[in-house]
Image 1 (cartoon, rainbow, N blue to C red):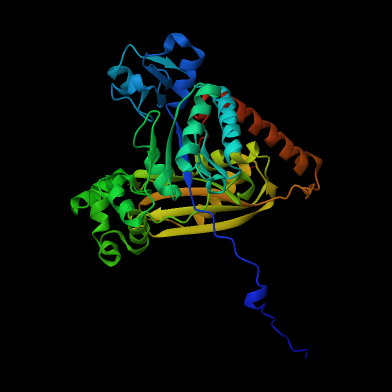
Image 2: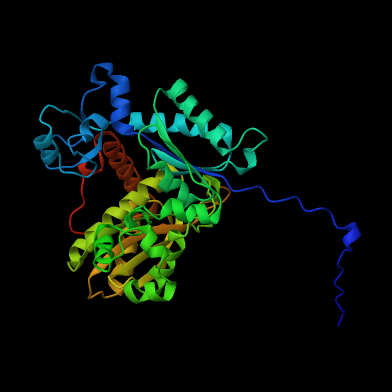
Length: 417
């Protein structure tokens, strides 16, 4: 047996280790994005209340409301009929997702001039890690101001920016002074505690309306109230896993990196219900819709996935995940839905569900070829069926891109055949 000798370089010959670049994260959130684009394209709408979404005479919800409309209490996800009751003279417009995607692409191109580390969160917001772009006299605030100027000069739209040491703090900051805001979070640990303390506990990721109400009954209304509790005490109220989550964020602790498109290893969507749901059929329908959203994102990114993953969280924050492979790498809705429902049904859930999620991973590499498995019978040929399903998915994507995700809805699902 050969002996292994470990050679450790002496200190004199060790290359100097450069200091790590400071983390400086920007979160950019465009202001009333859909409505702002409509006012940009139609100058006669500027200064008027504009609501983008379903028309008030149909069942549907508001996608985005201009700030003029928000003064009447109109907000996203509100039924359009309610919005009309609050502001009958508002201008209601159908969404034009192709136009919004075009503007979003131009905005991302601007972000890319500042740093390659850009993580789009949605069509109108993104995280940027600008730590590598810092220079003497050009700190994160200077970069944020320059970025905001370019958005106005080149796109003619405003965005609100949070500047912070991590993603959670940057996201909180960008939402504090909208529209056209610029909020800077301090870097000192004690100053971060003071910054967060007066904010409502609902500002913490994962604390929705129902959780905030439950915490309020315990006297926990602000992030400062969370800060005053030790983690063990908090766990008695919320469970150990969720206690760790909110305890860390209440102190501004978040070490997640900015994930660029090239780094993405999975695509997922999830839904947290306002109230825990006991109707399993309704939860399954939500899972179908999540799988369709994932499928659309997969196809938009030209990816094929090998593995499906579901996540189910209950009222006590106990969380189950299950995963399973596809017969062939796919981006088709039918295969995604069938896999998600199969994994869900295996769990035999009999208690209320707080959250349901669906995702895919194990993407096919660009240099790999998709294997085809023809059946013994021409009329059941896998290639033909896949091509037909692909054409159907493309048609559905186009319709939803033009008229919104509610234009089509799958009914009861009996399987992929």
